[in-house]
Structures are given as structure tokens and as C-alpha cells.
Image (cartoon, rainbow, N blue to C red; front, side, top):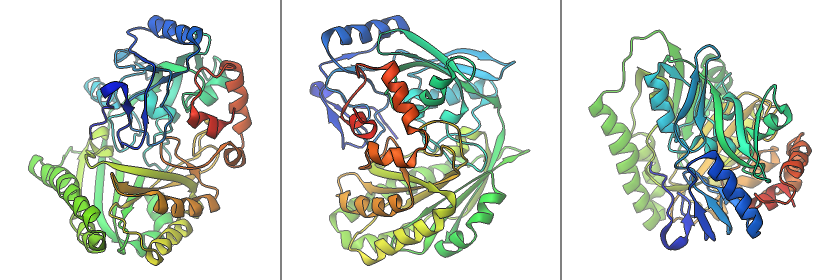
Length: 439
């Protein structure tokens, strides 16, 4: 899906179209030195600073009325260390470009999300993740990073260098500074076999623990107003490589999943009463298939139908109860939901504000088609998520504040104390960070 943000008439808009901002000025630095100078100049002028990537967050995490940093000139791989099995990449590099470059070098990230239009700094700063039994989010694969802090100086961190910054900055929300480069762990490129097949909702929940335990990567989509899901299992394979055929891929991934799905959502937006029938058809449109390919071609998919999204991480053991409550809420309401509910998992990690910090997690994402009222549905879903101590994705719609996060993140105070040290003047502040982190 295209995630280019618009700068028309001085207004920046996100991909989902639900956030807009009018910065005083935009800067596209071509070097770390130029970025540092832009940060110092903003401080002199009394302006706040935010960096923006692809605009794919549905929150206003990157919005600013001050100086907007566009990192499109800070792209590309700086270095590859085959002894340490790491790659250092400029912060504005799109994940798509990184994945292609790594594949050419015979390398790969261990895990990734299901789209690759985001920049590496935007994806990691908001906690972008895929699904995995043992392999965690993109940020959890970071081995080091550098960022420009509030005084314009460059700070590098890793497990050995400034480890307290490293613990937090891997998912830093843009609150600690502007990331300039990230070092990722990589491994030799490998093959994944993907098995996609429909499965009844009740069976998925009844067998979820087994499905999770038996597969390296398991996820599913439930279609509201139906008892149907589509499941996907990805596991490492010795080969041979058997990619989806070009014609079959176009028909299922482009024509059905994007073209026909887009048309169905247009119909549903105009005639909501038709949505349950459309959902039943949509949930049966894709047939089972199995294919084997390199990781980014298995993990990621084209997503061209625009939407607005809320996603919460709940304790993995609470997944089945949470989903049953979501289904009951939809069934007893007048909501008409044309987008499937996406379910993924992640193991516990050690990142201060990771949604999987210190607990095995399950992710439940609810969506609404762009231009369709979403607030009532999301509010009802959020009540259920928060009742299970859910942690919202930092880049997706939610209404939680600092008081809530202090309750669900055991190390929340560590992050805010570090922020006080690195950005005491709140140069990187905006309304969103004021809400979620406090003053």
C-alpha cells in the first residue's frame, strides 16, 4: 500500500487520513550534521521538532506545529558486519528497500510485520511487529542505534554503551530524540513455508494454544458477522522454493484482497445493511494455499485498501476470552464491520515501552474502512481491551493516557525519567506525547 504523506498547502496528513498538522517549516537533512543543526535551530527559535516517516501511524505521534523532519535523504545501508551478523541502516530507509537490499546480500531479518512501506525508524519507534512464537518485534532485533538529542548532540547506544538509553530508545515514540541510524541483527536468508487456510472461529479459539505451540508464526483473521477465519502458519523450510505463481498471486493478493475488497467496502459504506452478507462472501473468497519463499515475500502483503485501525496487546492467556467478548459485543450491537479482526502473538521482550514488555502477548487489531465512522466500535472494543490490561499500539488509535500506562507498564517511570534527562526542555513534545507520557 502506498504510504506517502501529503504536504499540499503546507499541511501534512497521515496515510489513514485521520491526522493532519501544519508545521512552521519542513526540513529534509542530507546528513547527521544537517539534522543536528536543524534541531539546534528549532530550539533557538522556540519550536518543537518531530520526525515523520511514511505517515502510517493512526495516532498523532508524528504531528507537529513546529519543525517537521523528513528523513528521505537519510537512507540506505551504512555497513554490513558479517562477523557480528549485523547491518547498520540510515533511519529514513523504507523497510521495503532494506528487505530487498538484504536479500541481495543473502541476508534477512528474523521477523517482520505484514507491510514494508514504513521507514525503519518509524516502524521501530512505534513498536511495529509481526507474529511469532519465539521471534519478537522489529525493535527487538535492534543491536544498536544513534539519535540526536535535545541539545543537538549525537548519542549512540547498545547493550554495552548507554544501556539505559538502549533499553528505552528501541521503542522511543520520538520522545527521546531523532533517530539517525539503527543496527539490526540479521541472519543468512532462509525459506518459509506458508500454509493459509480457512478455519471456523470456534475451532481456532479451542485449538489456539496448540496452533501457537506447533508453528513458528501463527496468525488469523476473523470476519465479524460470521463464524469464519482465515489462518496463516509460517515455518522454516529446507525448500525447495515454491513461490505463489504470478497469475495466482495477482488474482488472490491484488484482485481479490485489494480490488474486490475495496469495491465491497465501498458498497458497505453506502449500504451498511449489506455488510453481514458481504462478510460471509469475503470470508469464503480465499481458498487454502501453500507456498515457500524467502521471508519478506511470506511475511508481508500488499495492503492498498485504506482504513483506520486500533490494536491492543493483551496477555496471551487472555486472548480467547477477549475475542469472545469482542464477538459478543459485535453480535449484540448495531455495528456493521466490513474489515476482519487480525490476531497475532509475540513473546515477552525487555524493551521498556514495548507492548510485549515482560509478558507474552496476543495482539487484536480492529479496523474500519476509511471514511466510515469508527469511534463507537473502537470505544466498545477498547473497553474490552482495557479490562484485560491491554496495551495499545503506540501508532494506532486509542484514548489511553499517562496514568493508565503507569499501571500497565512496570517500567513506565524509567522511561519518563530518561526523557527528563535527554529532553528536559521538551523539544520533541507534541499533544500526543503530552497525553501518553505526561508533561
